[in-house]
Figure 1 (cartoon, helix red, strand yellow):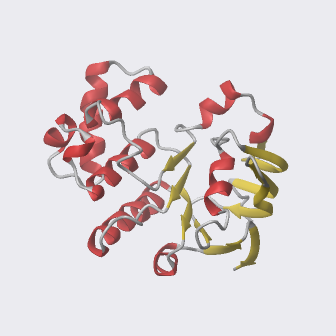
Figure 2 (tube, rainbow, N blue to C red):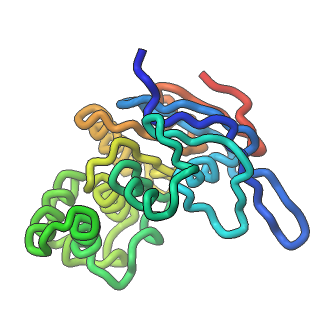
Length: 238
């Protein structure tokens, strides 16, 4: 039997506020397998995004991970220091955030943002990285990559920005993508195109996808397995 690429056991995350504490994830467990799509489903505030962000330790300062194990191919991510974990982020596990415009730097051109990922992680020369950035933009369905590369986020539609985010997330060919509500701000036609791009990554590269969503229509189209969350707890899986 194939081993999971990510195995989460007993993940517990607490948020602190001035007046109260709340458990955004309470004893959450799941397995994600290579080339498969696992959906974390739930309403707003159910803890699904917290669970996804906890895998890469990119939680806000008011969040505390109180317990649990997160293993990537048997390695304990929770035991890694920040330097070790930086080697995983982007290169082996990447995240696509819910708001694509907010996820991009407004004062840096799209081409430079994609190229920066390549130069930072692969020590690729700038000229080569810029050429590779054009190929990446074309591969995610942006038919005029030269124009897109010269553009800034505010000059593009939400759907275009989301494709750019997918391009950045997949630039280093990670084994796992965490996609947090990747279609929530998009119209139905663009949603279908973004889901197609994600599905192509799974089919062509064997990428495992952790899909965080509240949309059961998206779940029915994409997912091999579903974990339903409510009030921080896993209430159903199948």
